[in-house]
Length: 219
Image (cartoon, rainbow, N blue to C red; front, side, top):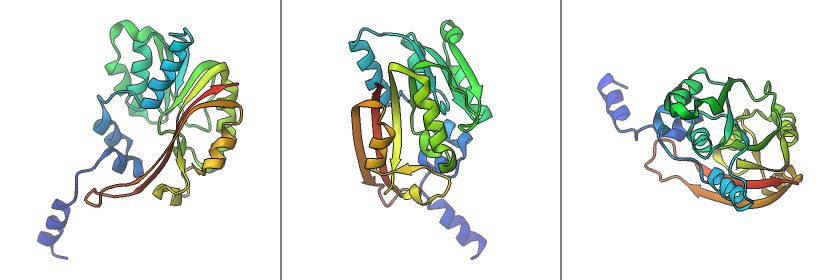
């Protein structure tokens, strides 16, 4: 293909979206594409359930916190937060966006899922994070999550389903509906919303999405 033709093809590509960056694990690009967006719905739903119980603060662990959209929401609501991520740029994005008066309630740690040590907590938030835990580490890591959450505490986040396009990627963790129920055996499932749809064909890398959105309370 001639250079002019190559440029033409490149010019016709749709812009990169957050999912395109996450697919290739370009986390620097991902952070830039999502910075400033609001907290995930599952986190907000979990916090609302705490509020109905009269609980308006506590200690939360935000797994793969990225640029910090969920951590910042937790801090603004009066929670103490440990934000973890294995990418060195994540904490820089987060600290730069945290209001000065809330910085004392934030800790950050650069660590991988398999090396993570999780202290006792009231909430673990894993927004679109767990699929990036390699299957060979998943069961051990999930056991750490279960042990870390106190009785009455909550898990909020997502599992990717077995019909998702990325289920073909060997280093991603995906689960069927029944497998998700089994994983959450030690929890009372308060919200489980299964989402399944196809991207429009005019997107850069259209994929089939299969996601389970979860809010669950530790028994």
